[in-house]
Image (cartoon, rainbow, N blue to C red; front, side, top):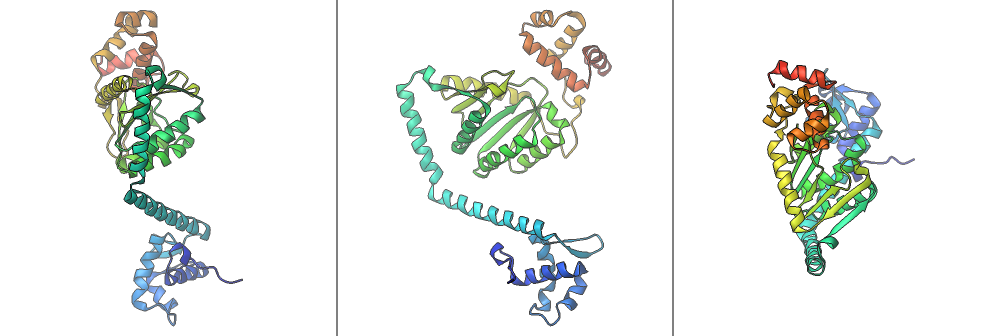
Amino acid sequence: MAQANLDFLGVPPDDEEVYRLLLRKGHFRQSELGRKLSGDAVAQDDVVEIYHRLTEWGLAREAPSGQLAPISPAKAVEGLVERKVAEFRAELEAEASRRGVVDSLLADHEKSLTEAARTTDVSESIQYIEGMSAVRAVIDELTFFTRTESVTTNPNGVLTEESIAHARLLDTRVLRRGVYMRSIMGAAALDSPVTMNYVRELTALGAKIRISYQPLERLIICDRAAALTPIDPAQTAKGAILTRDPGLVAPLVALFERMWGTAQDLPAGEEREDADAAPITEFEQRILRSLATAEKDETGARDLGIAVRTYRKHVATIMRRLHATNRFQAALLARERGWI
């Protein structure tokens, strides 16, 4: 059987030769490489360069002892393929940008929206999308056409591996186009390593993300022209409402800006922001006092002039900040902190 080469994955013959030598020998030091290649076509002046290039290709790793050890063939080839795919994607995106493909498609898309706006009333500019698969399809389309700004909220704050896998392609695609992305996460995100790893990944790509200790409304707004909200905030799996009507989108943008203004920047480094770091608001103090005086949530909500559901969301947020397991404990911890 003829030997298959790695040149189609971009690995030069000299580098591949050293990698194969590593696979046969197991490992060796940089000082030993010259002797092992003696008599071969590889010039000795290139030994050091090849040695370091192998780690860049992901074909080998340098152990703490200073020895160079090979990466397993399956993992090495997988990494080379991913690298080649990334290069190919970058080339295609650059060519698409040079040709103005997205701008051309957007022009047709916006033209159709403008024409539709002239012939439809407000009720026809609102769409009800039922089921999560249909909602995801709409999000895919919205993010594809987004070119200036994308803002989202995640009241729950915790992302699963599955949801991250779906979101990563969309988010990175938007960020690579230079879209200004902002997102507000519920405070529970700080206790989820999986979520925080993805959040750090996005911020490294340019996204702006904040943490909110206040109740959040679920929103996705693209280019301040289209907004997506859940049909039922308590059961988001039911579906979503998509609106492009300026009179409806503008208040949702204003709502997001208010939530953004009260949210906190991500804690520096990998440290978890403690509850003390975010000062308690006057309204939260009123909520805490009501826990001690109101016998029922309905009474507390009525005294504060808010809906019972909103009252309970505030109580849950405060309990999470205090790491309290019940309301009585929350009141005690709040007194210890001097909040009430």
